[in-house]
Amino acid sequence: MSIINSLRRIKAITVKEIRQLKRDKITFGMVVMIPLIQLLLFGYAINTDVRNIPVAIVDQSDSAAGRWIVEAIKVTQVVSVEAYYKTSTEAIAAITRGEIRAALILPPNLTEKLANDETLGQWIVDGSDTMIAGAMMQLRNMPLDQITGIDTQRPSRFEVALFYNPEQRSAVNIVPGLIAVILTMTMIMFTSAAIVREREKGNLELLITTPIKPLELMLGKILPYIIVGLIQMTIILGLGHYIFDVPINGDITQLLLGTLLFIAASLTLGLIISTIARTQLQAMQMTIFIILPTILLSGFMFPFEAMPKPAQWIAEILPATHFMRIIRAVVLRGGEVSDMPFDALWLIGFTIIGIIIASMRFNKRLD
Image 1 (cartoon, rainbow, N blue to C red):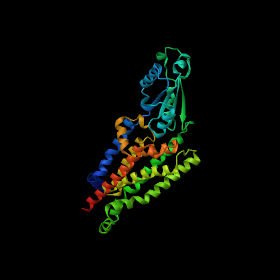
Image 2 (cartoon, rainbow, N blue to C red):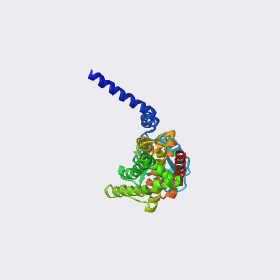
Image 3 (cartoon, rainbow, N blue to C red):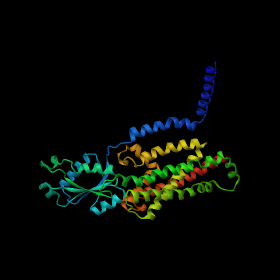
Image 4 (cartoon, one colour):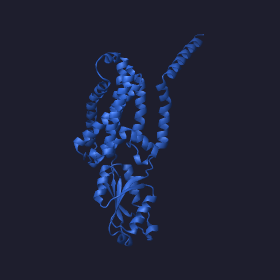
């Protein structure tokens, strides 16, 4: 009899939990959406088979042989020719700005080299991403016998020069990207519970009675965490430099500027979540829901170019994708934030729009 009573009590509690879960629409949505998004990301968007790497051509020969070689490279689908430059200096500058990942230099005496079965040209490659570098290394052995008509035994037809990470060390690429990942996790998490915590502690009513405006409240919530974010960036990059010998080729002021833009955007995203969630548990679930695609689609683990177009469109919305480009360009390639105006403006626009949305949503709660 006691067992039956115990089962009845367990059933009553179970029914109560299910009803609470049905009433909590955000939690119920997370239960469905988190496994769904993970499945789609890992099964569809994540792809280690790198294709369509953006490259440029510097054809100094201006010959039919040069055009044949370019067409043969296009057919491989490993690269996508995005630009043509007259000099290798222009191509290297484009690599520094992140516009292309590699450039093929074809010399003026290409036809003569072809006739003598010599090395035909040189690939200069952004070697900071080891997966991109590995894919480009395969192209040096691509067969050109059908184009040249020469049955050659030469093992490689192109030389490859790996810039920024010639030793192909994973830490060189991982450590700058880790700054974006950790800042994303901590900054969004800090602020996602900011407004909710005030409500749960009963402080929201006090804030409403004060003369503080919603915009002032939003700015006051994020400003302390900017210092926290800068401290985290300094720790990660400092330890990466002294322990893993990661080079810091860019200017420190550019590094701080790019990081400030990203911290502001991430904190704003956390504030928007905070105005949507009704409890700290909901805020945490929504944070996890945002962090998963942010890490997987930002280019931290898998090359951005290997993702299908819909995944790239989603990635372009997220601040971490733009900061990943900025931080790697500044730290590894010695670039400046102004070299990537689209990414910088996106982070600024995301912050401004996010602050406005968070302020408007806070106003609605006052109503």
